[in-house]
Image 1: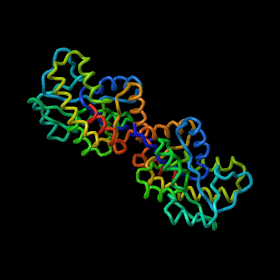
Image 2: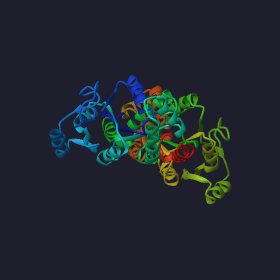
Image 3: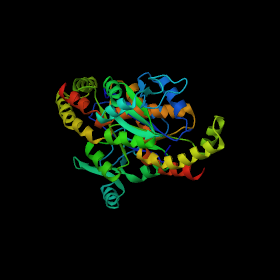
Image 4: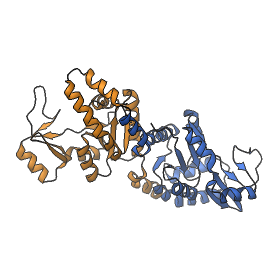
Length: 203
Length: 203
């Protein structure tokens, strides 16, 4: 019912299946936009500016951060990463739902700045399944898999800070649950003050 | 994901279409049970004990209320009405979602006692449409219609105390939204502490 789009924060351990889920969700729901982060690191082969990241200079990044134009930001391996606020503002005011796929520290920053945002944590069905998924990729060494599992053990308790948890058991079921969450959030009374006013005041 | 069923409070002005909605919802979702109120008033012709109401004596009612066995209760025109807590406990522990159709005062009592309950307020698309629906029934006098509209004007602002508001525009759309709300609520992290524990502790 709300006319403004939702800002949705999507987090979860690496290998939980966030990428596959997002792709399936975007294919089903044309009203969703994906936020693209900005970074000061150099593009890797195959990466396209504005698709994987907005590749910007350190100077530009610092300028934007100082002007409050980043919704959240972090440094990682000497590079800066951040979420530009302007596209999110524009899309949500057009009624589009915007999804932000970020890690838990960034998610906490967004929730502080935008308490109206909707936090969804994607959980693997179990750590065993997570391990199988990481190994199936075939691209990770044993050491990387072990690191990812250790990181998952640290991250999963952070799910409690999110509004919702969705278990990525089958993609179809998880997409259905995420769509239900978006639909339900739009019915929240705290997002619909103007609607109730309208019903009362326009006979 | 949660294994326990939801307790859902359904309110909204008379004529907003709650009855029709509930019927359509029950037909679609076999996991829902409808709470039946208890009353001390006498059954009207056609009313069946245990269907419209549990018809009980004043003595029994007072006994149950004193023993804390009513989730909410009220007096109206010299008769007592209340919601027996026991069936709700039983159904929700079996994983069934239980819907309680009550007016706003009762809804407030339930929310205080069961903050985990989900409040859904059914809104008419407009007061004009509400008036048309009341008149279409053909059973209400002009005076009753005017009273109902005045009551609706008083009740609609109470929607803000509910978690969700659903506009009963078309039955299909409203049922879809209510089902999305139930699905989303089951994904709330605060209902899923045990699930996150399980994922972490069972590999």
